[in-house]
Image (cartoon, rainbow, N blue to C red; front, side, top):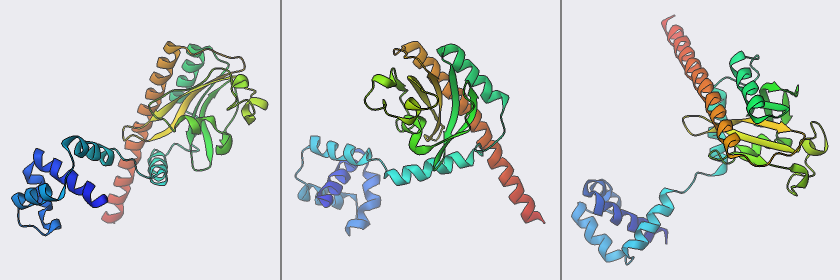
Length: 239
């Protein structure tokens, strides 16, 4: 089946770009693009619709979860944000989130290998949360969406969660993933309250905008860290 699928996709590629298939002709032991075309027509009995479907299925296949996790941690560590001191630029974002959402708590946090580390906070003096208790770790699983729990006590998925039954006894939780330009979701801007909040599209939009601001700050850090590393390497070779 895999062989037939590969051939089908090659045939589709040939229809779009003969030069592409000319490059892969040697892989099939054939002399040129024309030979590839004849070979594919003989070997593949799929319709054009089936060919396109097979192509989409393979082209959109996601990498394994372990590989995505490794890439995410590598991108996070490149920003050199973990365990860094408090910074006014991040604190301003949490104060904005707290004010705009009207909640008692707002956080900016980043998901390391085994913890949620809190960079900035309003209303809850927390520094880190074990990953098994982290709601932000759930939020970053879908980088394009805001994670929203209107009433955790009434939600069977979270009613027994440690952050609901214990400190801070949250009822409402919403988080917008902080997504780097390279696509990795490394953290979240979260707002938390001890009373339920119904879904609010405008609050959702504002939270995502604040997450984008946090992402911009991270990108500046990542660029500066890469520049400093390159300069240090250059000095090392110059000595």
